[in-house]
Length: 444
Image (cartoon, rainbow, N blue to C red; front, side, top):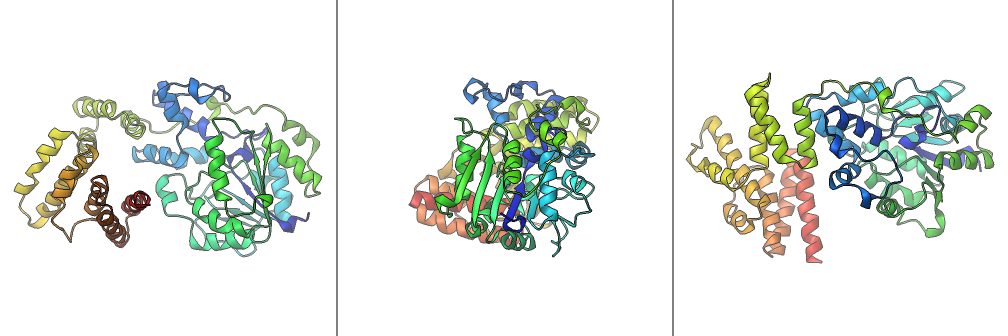
């Protein structure tokens, strides 16, 4: 095998083995939860513990995906991009980085979603690097699709929902076509890459995925990876299972004459990673507000509401806390809140009050939808408000589906999706698309 025949995609696991030992998401998650005094969510440090033995709250934390979790912290004022940049500074390259650097300088196509510069440091000469948000460079030897330390980084769900940039996706298509695709240390959780993989991977010569041995708890993740490979013939795909996927990848590269590895780095592959949360930089600007925001994300609405209420009474920034408390009441309200919002009808539809009136109406209908009062939502949205946001159409579509009017639910969801795209609002478009897909699934 020649390096020019190979496309390699490296995820966070590539930087986990010594001497690099960079943290994985679970270490970052636990550090942030601990900083916010949310120890009850912390899973055991024993990675091999089965999910069935975890508490309900620990299972919630174990199921988190990085970018939505980081976005919840970011919304509460925690500068997560700055913190992550500090966490991945000054890397000490490991054997995987040495192999990736040699492949990059020998003509292989090397991509990574990691921010660190370990591959660049491991190279014997300066690599030509393309890093998001810049457009791909024609002669780039290393592609960093989520950015690089010192520049902008893709760290939140808001970033991922934009999808993979068109120029980057075209470059991915070109680099994969006709080559052996090798995945190392990659979970395939990235929401921006998942649609791209489904269209790109069928053009690969074959796919080798270096992965941990299958367990009951990892089966869902394995199924997601198989889904990305579904359009490749089964004989062209292979999961290379090993307790240490980094060791298996390095040995594969040496066996195929693609790289050589210094003995001191090769031996360190078999050492336990020395990742220590105490070595992570302190999480900056944590606060009670950040704790409440994370609790909302984790589903503890009542506890978050109590924190906001205490901050309104005793906190330093009472106005911001009051705004947060009102937002919780509007977004997670009960029937009394919905009844209170019935006063929208009394607000004059003129000037600035017009938008207040429309917002109160939307919030009331959202609460009724979340409470399961679907017939009420259908009646409340019978009158078409052509100048209102797509939110109402999306809620109406979901309510129509729940009361069995599937054809109408589908057409309303289509209108909601078109409206949300016209508004240029990714989250509303995602909600409308979800309702449309859900309705079509119910239609068979």
